[in-house]
Image 1 (cartoon, rainbow, N blue to C red):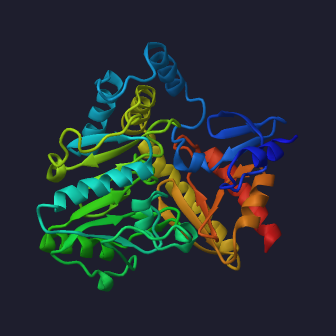
Image 2: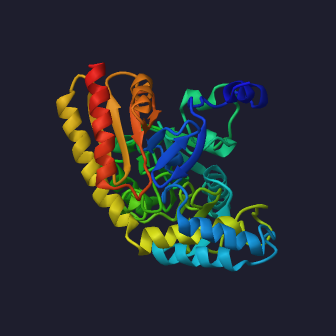
Length: 390
């Protein structure tokens, strides 16, 4: 049986798999079992910030695994403590809670917000159209996209979904508990929030005293050339949720809380079995140091600017195909005037992996170690593909 046939027999059919049988990864490249090499602009969906087989991550995983892989949260481990301290140092948040994933982090953030609001007569959680916060029920309750919600009803109450990037539609009041916001919508097509929209939320927060929760699961930890996507705006969220790149490829997420919510949780109010796993945290220490202390965040900014310029040139060269290029740092969307499945399939045949999101947007979230030479390689393949399809 082929790997595709075995996959159909073994798994629930929830994923649209790529027609590749991957053998290994090195840096920004993946290699299949036939020896073909692929430049990965997928980045494990923004997870592999340091690329594949990063020696520091591999060494940290190996060394921690020899000591212990799991203890439970009845113990404080040096790996979890050091990672939490690095997060506090480089983000300015006061407290950390480790989760297993981004969607679990969103659920925890909802709980923190609810508990904070329980003594303040605040109950309404607000989110925005076209958002993606995860696939658990709290996350789904904050999303309007039929693709993710259909058939899973009913959802949780006391949630409102307002139009994204529409300051005039911000129906917020003293009863508003929290506003959950992706400052760059990832799954929604790499759509940044406008300066005007964020400024309006910040002004209404000062008036009504609600919490702002930043969903930085895809955009956080240096991907946009700054610590968070919200770092590009004049606003200070009370809570941020991070996950994807934090563990260097291992599963981990974190809820970061400001002083405003630092004392909300007490013993027994929230927990998780695997959150703060010491092996994931050991890898996370390497990720944080590489991004914040060894220049990778600067590379995300400079390489992103270079990539955006090249993609802008492609837009000018192929206006009948490319309608927009947007994003920040190495979180980039190329919006096409047609569905992009065929385009990314052709790119794959040319040795470049990318992802189609929101039907017509090529999502580019490569490892932050990508070089200008590798970006040029990607641009050459994209130019060739665009020329054949127009």
